[in-house]
Image (cartoon, rainbow, N blue to C red; front, side, top):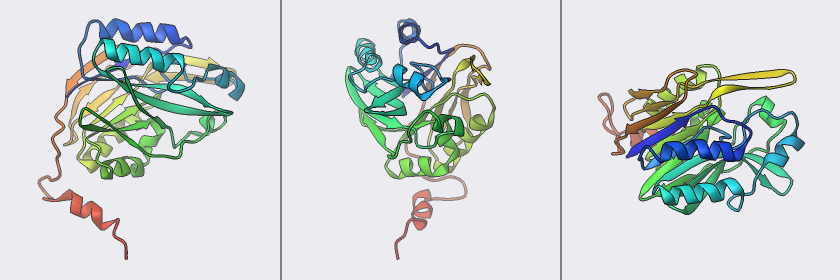
Length: 258
């Protein structure tokens, strides 16, 4: 599978972010494109009210409808992030569209303390099937909790895709561990740039990465520079390594019922 990710400086303007993506889609061809966390609206908001005004419905909102059109035009799958409105709730959401079809959405389960002031917690871990490939989607801090990846693996995930907004290197390092312990390739798309609100400044690292099922980093984007990363990933099931011939049986041990 040919996978791409767009590491860029997100702005609080949907149209500018969409135009930025389209410029790359016109030049590069890939099957799946992954964008950072909250890639349509930006990360820092002073209040829940301000965030709510930027939030969109899914799939009827502007961003999803525009992404549906782009995915059809360029015959690809796009995984992107936005603030999702549902009645009075707001979720940090990843949306999956493919070749003009709405596939589904994942709402971030593990929120940072700052995010808990703005967002509601998601409560369902899901995977998405596109052209016979099962994709596990996570958002940034979710990656710190091995249960998310392991649940997605047990649901049949062939690849893990992580949308992120981080400034330090911890999430970057964890990405390799998650690929190794699940023998599953992982794509981590982070952003660059900076945002500020009174009392808080955020600077984003970049270093988006692709890790194969053996734990080798096959692509690392530069720090704090825009990059459209392209990588061919082998999605053949890897269920053994040099020290264990059957990882599935070892994993199943922990889920036995008495």
